[in-house]
Image 1 (cartoon, rainbow, N blue to C red):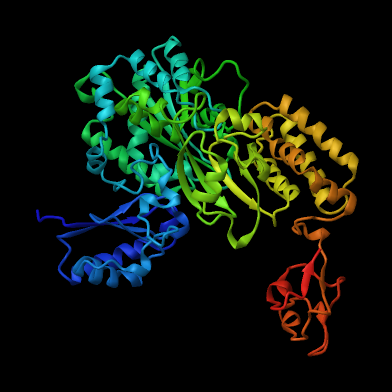
Image 2: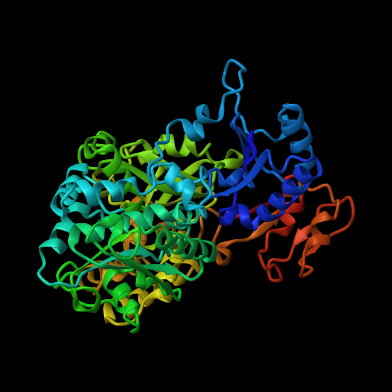
Length: 597
């Protein structure tokens, strides 16, 4: 085998894949072959590098040069200049300039310098479809240590000492959950993984499965050993085709290498894992509904207690952790509980992965120590709000979460502080909102999602969420009353206290948090029949300022319904009875003559 002098890593996570990563790989390999470099330079497909806003992303080692917004047409220049001549293609390099004018390295940029990658440690670093690369980065070392040096109770004690809490949303101590299952009697137990990530704007688990599937398989096997299980299941969204494909390959390779199956590492411990595809029901992210779905039944939650650790899948003791939780396990075993507990805060140990989205410059995936202030995430890591707009709020926790207002931008992000201000960690979706976002409309958006996804088993969720949505729709249409606000709060309180599962119990959170922090917007909709953000169409009206209008007719030419009329070089007017409030005229006007209110 010839000496490999360079590796070209190409992100093939969902974001970059949809932007043409496969074509980039093909173009690079064609150029390398053309110059006789195929044996010396290897093109490697990797998982998500995190900086999704800059994709497609390419990193070349050993230099570590990070190229962004790469296209297949750039392949020739990359190979001829960088690979052949050793001259990086400056126009493609992702870099930031500090106050002194010096270009910083990738790890020194605000996006990466404060991150601590544990769950994401191998994403963007290894080929997720090559088990040998995973092994080269300490893969399956934790499993070997556990099976040959530790008792099941010692494993559980190590996870307890780390302070790791479940990253799926509830934040229940992982070690304690494992302990309950281990203490439950019976010869048959199950270790399951919740990969049914369904929150709008969340893609943390997907990225781990696409970039480092073996870390989840290894951790599930460790969990099985700890609680006395011989079978595990990964319940993954069918809408994640890349993740599913790589999971299947990882399972095949793990069996081939003897890391799954009978007598693992020559011990008397046997464990296997099956994949079950979710059919898109958000409620199946709830642990009991997920287990019922694995059993082949309609995905509906059941009453608790008994809890899954006592009576779960097929009526047997079961643990269920999400992908990110499992992605931390092997690191804890390899580096020790103390090292993990040294990160984060007193009550929230370790790191947390967030999917940054919405009105933010650096959309993507970040992993930061617990306790990192929200301001650092928004302004430094996220690069602030684009277009000079003002930061208004951040929505965390998906449909179950809440909106954190700009006044709380300095809050440290951990379980305790978010609970204190009426928000929640959730699974890690973080949607940034700016001054153009209507908080009433945001609450309506998330509630509509919950209404659509409710399984309908219990009436508080089935009927109550629908009634709340109808009231919000009434308010955003300019027909709301002050009594409607009282009814909303009353309904929200009853639903939270009486719904069967977490979906219904948390459904009112977006409403309650926006009513608490942005009540003035609700009042404006109800009393003034006005949307302060200019977002609710029913409350909008467009007008032309005759003092600013130059009579260029650009607005009338783009109006799809002919609502704008006038004479060239004279002010134009809008017929509000015809206007459909599409905003095309305002976007087209170069003189700022058109406003909405």
